Image 1 (cartoon, helix red, strand yellow):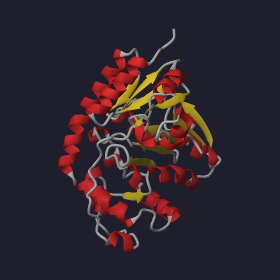
Image 2 (image 1 turned 90 degrees about the vertical axis):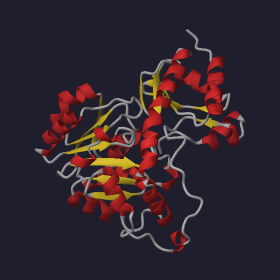
Image 3 (image 1 turned 180 degrees about the horizontal axis):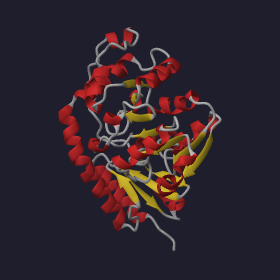
Image 4 (image 1 turned 30 degrees about the horizontal axis):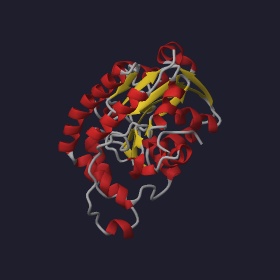
Length: 330
């Protein structure tokens, strides 16, 4: 299995720092996520999940689409989609969320990692193209017209364009969710990042109904717990919270970029939920921060760090204090 953000317990053992004493900035998850109510109806624990609840209608309204399937986190779809095609050539944006490349390779497909400018030039060579938008970890964004042209070129040959929009909720106007009726355009969404509800394991696939039927058959019944479905429905319906979060998250992202820049870590990219710094000193900086109980995400291809947003003023101060102690050797 691939390494991802989090894993605080493992780092707590490695560095001898108690789990509760860590500041985890490694995941890119909204640290002030949607406030889950203290009360959850008792029926959520005693009944099997029901597809006829409010979740799909709330999701259709939120994502402005018609054809949508709820899955156990977008990771479930990432793992399942490669099994719906016979062996083919797949292009995956790089660097990007590594599970895409890994899952297509595990399913026996020929996978090539390309930067976006290479993808534009070589797209005719591939049957499936996977794009993360905005990209994780680089924050690269893509014009809607450009993406739809890629889809048209692939669709003519029975190909797919998969767009992972896990981090796009702050700028929903750039989403392809409302364009996803045509065959071959597959949009993945998640409640884990913007909503800060990674523990629910709720995501969505938006695409042509024929493909959704195939995917639903593969996944099987009851893939999302009743309580998760209920909480997700409430979160998707909370328009006031959506609006407030879309206002403050970009401000916090800018604050993080400026803070990192003050300590010679000017971001190379990012989005409203994280900042990404390419640096040859990534491993050393990661280690020095971990020694102080602060966890960021370390990448090795290319050498880079990703910082999520601190949750409180105390967390902001702790990060700044730690950055002051970091030594970057020339």
